[in-house]
Length: 271
Image 1: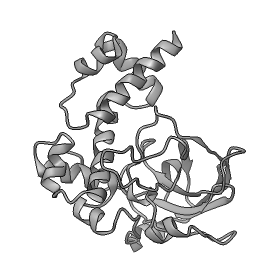
Image 2 (image 1 turned 135 degrees about the horizontal axis):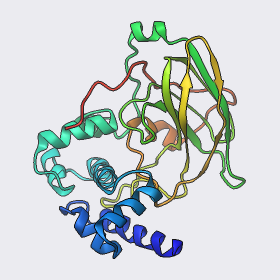
Image 3 (image 1 turned 45 degrees about the horizontal axis):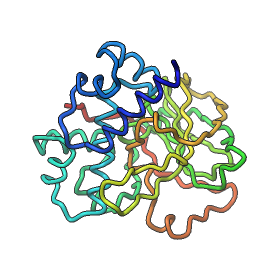
Image 4 (image 1 turned 120 degrees about the vertical axis):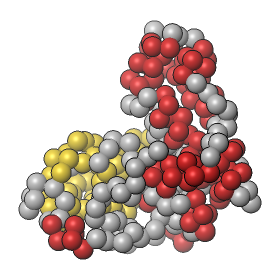
């Protein structure tokens, strides 16, 4: 029965990825899965960790990222191609999830950018979160971005982030007190072909949390990386995207990290 459920959810995800511009309803997706709407919603959330609608939204925005990088389509046309009827709604959702507006994402070629640090928040953020990245035996030495988010599905800018080797250790300093999720993901090299899946299933991924951080403390949290699965929602924030120079020659000296983070929380409300 479990194999049947996984095959059903896989069919639905493939339908989402193949038809990001179609107005797919929960009823449509349940028919693809060949389950009742209520049973389908339960099993989809159990396998993916998110409701079908949120997964579909992430797939659409991942396709939008690909179209912005690989085609000359204007933002209005990209908006239509991924199933949005209003450019304003699309741009608001894109900036909320990716961290930058569509035009800026295209201009910077999908590169994760250094966000401004809010000094007031940074002053109050004196905790540290550190640990080791535990890569699978055949995981290689990919660059991995480790980010701290308020939600298990990362959106926008992380509270703190850093980039390290998949077989190395990480340290996030100046972490503000609160309840956070650690997300580690290989930097994404975007395929230039429009309509391609933006993330390889062989990319490494780990999500841990919620992790309670108190002022002035140090938390040790190791991150066991695993290959990304088709059931994992697309990872949208720009901080996880490959930088042009790293895509050519991804060299980070041992023990050295690069920090593209900002202190603070999300300041944009989804429509």
